[in-house]
Every structure is written in structure tokens, then in C-alpha cells.
Length: 601
Image (cartoon, rainbow, N blue to C red; front, side, top):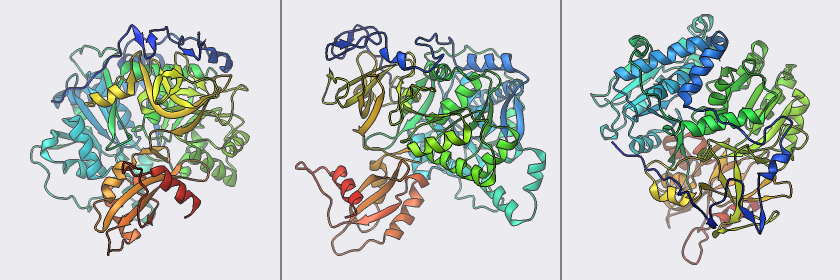
């Protein structure tokens, strides 16, 4: 078993001398004491916050007690109450215990948004084990890297992804797979409709579940059985009392793309995730516990969806309407029966919903609060959305390492479009010289953003060197983002030190894509960059240099990429160049390539 790497930031000194209390760092001699940005908070948002004690197990138990008969989950119209959810979690935990899962073990979840995802997540935590989230559309190569890294012995997997997981080499340590079907979680009438012998039903069924005639691949390791989800629940409820995980115990490994190489796992504790849910709740005082409806259009295998579409929603007793993927038709259909009141999403989703609703004459007035993240929020999107809903749409900022939200625009007249807002309650920031983090920048000057708060992670799994680079003394996390702060302490993102590409709300490591494209016959050199997309976000674009005397077919290269990369990582286009620009020390200059491609040369 691999041991996790941990690093506790030393107490007693800060990055530029003696330690200061939270919010006490100096900015060119002018101290930011008592978090002065709290003056810009929206009406009712507290300047300080008392965080809940205990773990996410305690959070879930509290919600079951407080909201027992209320609807917790809705999936294609099928509803699960909080009390029923609590029972299902106990039964799934008993089944996992029977499979040998114990405290500290990692359990991989490879599922889209569905009721079983919520149940499995909390069942794993109930045993003191650690959830590892995965994109169910990942390729064999991507899954192999992550399973080799975290060493999970048990995986709970969407049936359409089971064969990919079963084919993982025996040496990754995976011994048991639980197969999850989405269709049984749907209402009876819809399940019957999916059985109809018509093309539309067959297409819908194929999107949700593995077909009986789909190829099953080569023989998987003999010692890796596949257990149906319904059989996992046959063990009954959890009988033996387990020591509850402590607040500081590891809860989730969430993979995030780094500046180089393959994705790495951020270690998020129960306290990190519970703190971020509480911070989010405090940011929106207009919400009514037990009476809200939250739409989970964001995937819960992404940190943004994990917190805002699961932990946050369930902590306030909301009805969580689950969508296995974003589908504007499904969203508009759900709005008729269970109107949303809170919608976390990304700008393209808001644009599509607003346009489709206007075209079909469907009202959006129930949606009082919307928070956008993962990419720049255009002013045009805000104007269109707020006109359609009568509510607020604000932009926030965060990273997987901050659970994820750290900064947000206020829900109120003090917001500033074009900025990502001010730090959340209990969150401190610094803007420093990226070459010398002991030197703070003055308001208006650009520098690297540092964040400190209860939502900041404890490090990267099995990556002590990268943890050391990311977490400074005093608990400050280096974001790698270049920002400026105005006189009211609103933060504006200016640039990224890290050369991640943000597309559709997902982070793409250029190096990971380059590693795949470099294996294509005829490729001599390759560089992957992100080009700005109208309306926000970026497109993944590959610049390739062929081996002398050969040619490269861009379409063939893209087809090759689709076999080895998840769809959002596949370049939107390929540009063939004679050479790649390099620095004096031979480093490929991605920025110069990007500028050249933007200019259209």
C-alpha cells in the first residue's frame, strides 16, 4: 500500500518573517488587518464564520435528521428522501465493508451524476475510507495512470466504463469492481419507455447503459470480479459501529492537471470540504434551508461540482436534481416540474439555457442565485441571464486545491463585473512577486495570488516535492495565477504562470496532450496551447512539426488523439509548422506559439 505524503505548514513563522495572525500580512507597509475586503460583502454575509465541527459523515447525518421526509435527490423525476438516502448510504457502506474496505483505503468512483454516485461517496466516507473521483469518459491510458497513482482496491463504476476499468493491468492493485446501471434509478414509466423498439429509445438507452451486444474486450484479470450495485446493497444496513473519521482526516483525492506531466491528486480533508460548503452557504444568505432546489449540471467528479452540487446542496437540505450530463432539453424539462432556485454552472451553459428557454417560452424566474466559475464570465452572459431570471449571476474563483472556491463577487450591488470578487469569509490572500514570494505587491500592481484558509488542501498525494513548492510556510498556497487587486480588494485575473488550458470548465495539461501526440508516426515536435474562444474559455490547439521528408495528416492525428484522450483534451485543430520557437536554453516558447496562432499566421 502506498503511503500518503503529508506536509503540515510550520507554525511560528511566515514567508517573510515572523508569523502574523490571519489577515495581518503587510502590503508595502500597509497591513491588511481584519480582512478589509469584508466591507464589500453582500447584505447579510458575515465577516466572520464559525465552522461546523466533525466530518462529512456528521454533516450527512445531520441533514438526514433535519430534513428526513424532504426530497434529497431527483433523477429523471424519481425522488429519494433524505431518510431514504441515509438508509442507502448505510447499506452501501455495509456492502463495501463486506468487500474488505476499511479506514484509510481508497475507493475509486467512476460515474456520472446519479443517485448511486451520492450514495457511494458518503458510504465510502462512513467507513473512514477515501473517495477518489474519476471522469467516467477517461480513456484506458488516463485511468491507468490514476489507478497506478492512488492504488484503490475497490472501484464503483458506471456500467459503460466497467470494461475499461476491468482491463487495467493486475499490478494496479484493483481487486473488486461494483457495476452501476443508471436506468434502474429512473421512474418506472421512463424505464419502460426505454425498452420500446424504436430508434429514439435505443439511442437514449445506449447513452445511459452498456448494450447487451457491445464488445466486452479481452479477458480481464481472473481475480477481479464485477458485483452489481443491487448486490452491494444486499448486505443490509451497517451494523458495527465505526470510529468516525476526524475532521482533519483525508476524505477525497481529486485529480487536477499540473503545469507539467500527468494530473496529480489534491488531498482534501473532511474539514476542507465542509468549510467550503459553509463558506458558500454564508455567501448566499438569501437561501432558505430545506426549501431550495439545486441543479447538478456540473459533474461531481470535478471539484466545482463536488462542492456546490453535492456537499453544499445537501448541507442546506436542498433538493438536488441530478443530470448525468448537461443536456439543455433535460434541464428545461426538469424546470417545469422542479424549478431550480440555485444554479452553479459555467458561462456556455447559462448561454444555452437562456437561448433555449427564450425560444420555447419557458420561464427562468425561479432561479434566484447563479454562480459561474472555471472560465471568464462575459458581461453579455450576465446581462442576458439576469434579464431572463430576475436573479443574480456572479463570478467566483477557485482551484481544486481550495476545495474549490476561495473568491467570489458579492450577490448584491457591490459586485464588480470583470473581477472575480473578494475573498470568502475566513480566507486570506496575498499578491506577491512570483520570483520572490516574500515581496508583496501594492494594490494595482500585478503579482502571483497566494491563498490561505480552512478550505486549502494539505498537499498532493505521493508528491512531496510538488507539495513543498505549492504550500509555503504559514499555510499559503501558491495559485500560479497572476492577478491585481484594486483599492476595494476586488481581484482581477491577469494571466497564468501555470500553462493550463481551461476548456469547457475543465483543466487540460498541455504536456499530457503533447505526450500522446508525440507518439504519432511522423511527428518530430509538438506543442499544445490554448487559444481564446469567443464567449470565454479556450480551445486546445496543437502545433506539430513533421519529421523531415514526411507529412502529417491533421485528421489522422486527431483520430489518433481521440483514441487516447478524453474528448475535451483532444485538440480542436492541428497546425503544421516548420519549427517551434525556443528560448536560448532550448525551451519551447508556448506563449510565442500562442500569439502567432492568435494572429492567424
